[in-house]
Length: 538
Image (cartoon, rainbow, N blue to C red; front, side):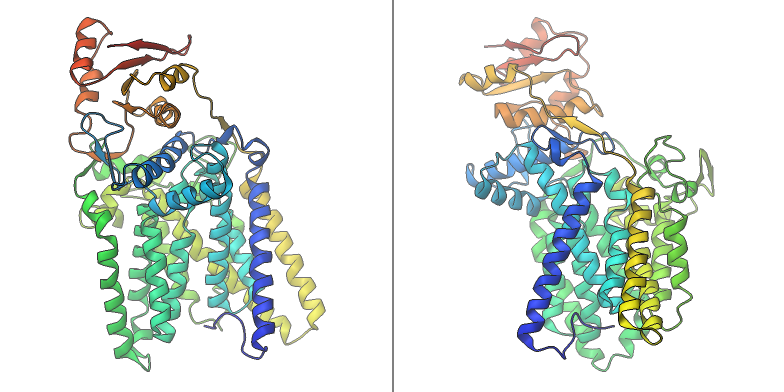
């Protein structure tokens, strides 16, 4: 492994070159993200990416809004609220991307963009691609020692179908912080320096407060990487210092995570789950090589890899000079197997039912039972494959460096990277993404103007319907407490009133009396065939 940069340049010149490199890369990833998400930028004021169609972008905009209110108006923890699931309230730690929310508040304050504006969400979508690109570049360059090889590998990772599939899941898009934690962890294993360990801890903590799912994926990767690096650690010249510093660093992250962990203890899944419930959310083998074999969609699904990427990664294994290639291949294989879930799915048929590793880890590791979607492990495999592709490009660079001139070598590698970028565009990006229009019904202007309305109830209330997500987004406009809520994990008692409302066959005097008794001031009735109607209860 090599460190970033080289020592033969004068410090000032080296710093200038580094600034230009990282600035150029930032602009490049941002421009490529704009192309990959077209026509988002042209419609950023009134639309957001539809992604997989869950409507969850509404939740993340709501969390921007709620975090600002909690911290700067109510001066309370952002991990609990009663502005939804009124009157009981709920914990929010499982979903709240606190670090991302804080950045959104900062950008909103500096730029003047409203905290609930679609534009702000869209800017963070583009920012996530830049962060992921820079982080994967840093990691792959550290492993390979070549910037051009790192750029090639980072393209494969940054613009993978996984991210383009999850454009409405801001938490899943920001995996770059975790990759930086991996990068500094690998540096620490080589150097045993406190600085590398501290940075690894800082970025892992940032990832933890940006996405619990991503943090657990990164944690799983680091544990497996350490297990595969036992020989390397044992042969380290400062083995003792490396081990005790590493253990101390791991323990130091626990108090940093405590506010999140304490809030999580009261959370429960919105729907009862067993390991069998994760089978429909698992990858199917054909999905790795056939775009959306089960989803019947024109664009690639979240686990699509393609023959080209798998072939390039496999070719890197033929490069015997790089000692870590087998480790990265093993890690890619492990996470691909985990993404298959508890059973082997081939299309609509299931084999080895309950015999894959995910099934046995489900009852042992809490994260596996919380995640519900084994297919999401594929993004860690994609990162490992991107590193392998970087190793392959580094092999070509090393070979040509000894046999041909520098100019010809640059032409060959640049041509290869252009072809790779075109292949990624054709295989992964394809056509324009779908957008969702972020309209707000006019009825909420009435509520906003009426100071006597403190608590509302949007009807109908139904689980797993996109309308419940939109209730959250609309709340950022009317700014009133609401009976409604839509979170995959919430407090045990949160849905007490909602569960009762779901049994209603109509909305008459008895139903009105129940809502009044629970402190509700008004009801908003939504009908897709008519305009939304406001009914005051008091």
